[in-house]
Length: 77
Image (cartoon, rainbow, N blue to C red):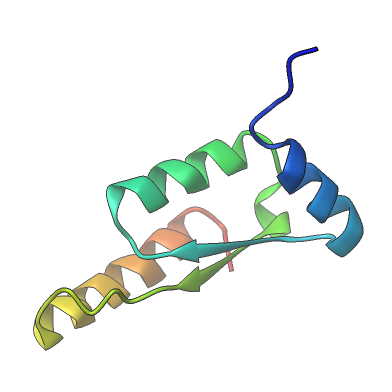
């Protein structure tokens, strides 16, 4: 029997009621959010900003602004 890559997420979701996503704003994080949105309602997904501290302070400020704008535009909290 083939399982979905989200099977463990579904199990946790049914226990907790929300999917918490560590979100850095990078392309892999954006892809993960779009994949999760195909499986869950937007109000069931919560983003938590994760700063890798790989960029300068000004670039990190821009990244945080992007994360906030992205979350808002996607209807996520």
